[in-house]
Every structure is written in structure tokens, then in C-alpha cells.
Image (tube, rainbow, N blue to C red):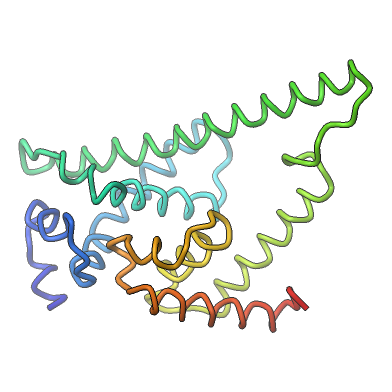
Length: 211
């Protein structure tokens, strides 16, 4: 089945993925288009900041999520005008994801700076939030440690999918059923719950979190 999807044209592969939970089609989609998406994410990120591997991985996954959002709304609205227009479309989506990320980060930092400036004027301590607090820095260290553990303990072709499942649940607060509704995840709700349970238990035993 996988071989048949690998032989499809890019346009036919798009059609096979739109509104579908066909895991084989989506695996081929990820395999075929990841290089062009990754290249654009790297190039666009360099315009904003020094690219780090973890951030690049997150932005690549965010691009896939944007393509899948609203029942693959982006893919449904796409109209191919020539053979290479699909790649141009993916480049635009990937660049948009990166720009939106850094614009959001810049706005968040501006809000934090304004809060700190106001607290200096009023003599009040700002709320514990953002990258400047000790708790936030400790949380960032823990998140990096957890992500390194994920990479070390869960290797193989499902690493990217399983990392996405873990962080969509633990960082973004998505339920197992919501994650299962993302077409390229390729699992039902019970499958997502099983992955989350296995990964959480392994991480807790490995780095001692939650004990």
C-alpha cells in the first residue's frame, strides 16, 4: 500500500490525504514534503533568530498541524495551476507558520516588558510568568530534559508522531480524542491514550518526574 502512494503524483497524493485518515497516505505526505517544509522553516527562522533543532522541529510539526486544521481546510482550498505549484503552496504555508510564531513571541515579550515597567512605576511585583521568572526558567530546563529523553527512548519511524502526541497533550492541553482527529497522527483515541500512557510512564521512571 505504501509503495502505491509513493508512486502517486503530488497532486494525487494531496487528494488522497484531504479529509482522510489514511495513515499510509499521510506517512507518504510527510516523507515526501518534509524536505521542502524543513528548508523553508530553517531559512525563514534565520530571519528572526538563531535556529535551534528543537524549535525547527516544532515549527515543522506546526506546519503539518496548520495543513490539517479545520478538516484540512488549507489543502481543500488549494488549487493546482501547474506541476510545481504544490511546492510553492507548501512554502507559503511553512513561512507563514514561522512568521506567526515569532510575531506572537515578540508580542508576548512586549507585554511582559510593559508589565515589568508598570510594576517598577507602581512598586508592585509582576505576576510570575514569562521567560524572566525563576519558575519559568526551571520549567524550560525541565521541558528540554523531557524532550531529550523522548528522543533517546523513543526511536524509529514513529518518533516524530509520538513526540507530537506527547507535546500536543502536555504542552498544548489537547485531549486524546482531539489529537486522534488529526489525520496524519493515524491513531484512534485509544491508540493515542496508549502512546501517552507509555511515554509518560517511561519518562517519569527515567527522570523521576511526578515522584
